[in-house]
Length: 312
Image 1: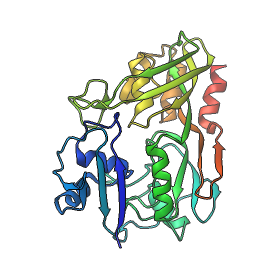
Image 2: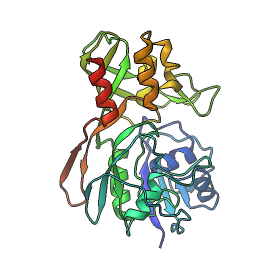
Image 3: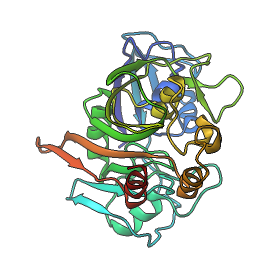
């Protein structure tokens, strides 16, 4: 039987389209698939059918009769994975930079999802094309991810992310010297007016985004920071530090060419050769379905640690 999922629209979530709201809260469900569910009456708002473009309101009760997942067409691939924790319910992996989390935009191979299918005989199929995937990291971001091994655990973890009960911390190196030792950036984000692939503060559909940071160390032209996410918007850390005019080192999408920020040609070349930006998901903590609070930490990858040594 299909699973019935009940969601309540919070004040912060109000104003988004119904299809967007459902897709986001089911952690990566295809918006196209959600639109089909809505059209067939599988999604109700306060007990009534609605259209995909319905604008949600605070307090709305959204019921979704999620269809049974179809078997994935993805192929398992023998890709090395650093698994830092594993049991019958879930696993925690340390993703390298350069690995895409799940297929999309013509990418069908080499993703974390392909690797998970190979490494785990049992994995959640809540999202047909995203087996096990509960949350994401950008391709260029390394670090910790939790993976669900069955549908019940997937929903259990997804609710923690929805309620912002999962602790997520990152280490980032940004250009320039941040003046304050601590700070909070609370600027709404959404798709950019002019480019659907970019996130921006200039958007027609702003969504609350809150990023906290603590300065760990200052260098002549850089600042090392610990970043605490209170929301999980796409590209949130990268865009918020761009907004502060201190873009993440190596992030050419939101910071432009490295040589615009770094005048030392040898150091600029070193950063360019990284082939990634300096952003690492270093800490992850959440509640296991058995009630335990689990916490994991990941050290900086070798290439980022080496760059730090060069700065010193």
